[in-house]
Length: 404
Ligand SMILES: Cc1cc2nc3c(=O)[nH]c(=O)nc-3n(C[C@H](O)[C@H](O)[C@H](O)COP(=O)(O)OP(=O)(O)OC[C@H]3O[C@@H](n4cnc5c(N)ncnc54)[C@H](O)[C@@H]3O)c2cc1C
Image 1 (cartoon, protein in one colour):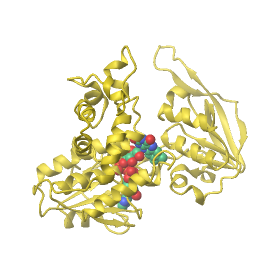
Image 2 (cartoon, rainbow, N blue to C red; image 1 turned 90 degrees about the vertical axis):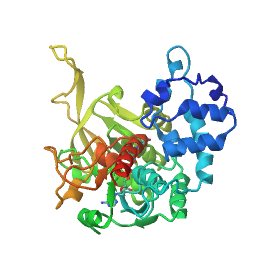
Image 3 (spheres, protein in one colour; image 1 turned 30 degrees about the horizontal axis):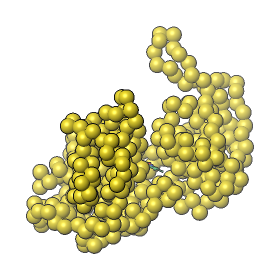
């Protein structure tokens, strides 16, 4: 037994679960079962609440979620619950078989588009509720970003294989290599199925909007298949999020001298701070307060930036300093600025879009103007996290169940 479990206070109102965790993992209940050696029961509780528990316990930014909200944080060291969750959920996943829990959705046909965390979690819950499910994905295998984005040195692909095996063993139909929009339309799915959940992620890269940016390599395609790219000796990565960290850590593993250039400073980086530290430990070098202004053959022109406190005492802003252009040579520029969902899927449908071109949705992700379509995960929220994708999928599934 992991002795961390003995330090848990089994709070009646656990902040780790209620405030910290987007899926409200029942930490004290699972801790108690773990202490009593009832690992199967603990595993079942975790899996029913969050089918991706074996993954989130590994990739969550726990300082932001459970660990950071542990009540012991005030005077002592918080409990490393995620270690225990990983131990319980990993062994449970590899032994688990899906079963029908009810006939609630018997005879109902549901289409799930996207076999990432949203598709997998939704398939589990809807299968258990008796539905007949077809899972579509443009990629040939299940997993979404877990298989085609997060590098194997952070998340072993055996977890994606395990989820794939779990759904296949239950007879859930998987149509890999099917791209909605190219191979079929949302209108036809809506007509053919009782309900549709779109968990198509956020894969459309944002542009740098500087001259020469077409010479850069996008981080997501690189992470999908790093061996397909010859990066040369020196690589610069632009960005400060999780994607940038995975891209630089992958490049350094290919033997490249790897630099991350970021517009602001370390405190502003949206990446999990642990990942930034791990990237440094891997040998990645960082240069902050650097804004790219032009991509040229053989390198990038950057301009220095600085933080400025406005005279009215408002929020500190990062300002580009004119006259500081300098050329930094590199063999490959990898860009990981941000990604957005591709809402072209709604073309030709009566979905109500807002002024920014995003679909208007209810609190549960149901699309206004369409009778039977829900959104979840990054396709609903923009690029977020696995656990937030699962939390939004749960809202969609519960609403869908109530409305069919
Ligand atoms: C490199 C990287 C590292 C990350 N690291 C972390 C981390 O450490 N921790 C964390 O919590 N989160 C991390 N994230 C974020 C996390 O992976 C996502 O928030 C999560 O995967 C979202 O799940 P999803 O199901 O909404 O979408 P995705 O996982 O993106 O899955 C979407 C699926 O939809 C499919 N699809 C898209 N369009 C279509 C279409 N038209 N037709 C059919 N299929 C389609 C795609 O092929 C894909 O398989 C990371 C993201 C990236 C990109």
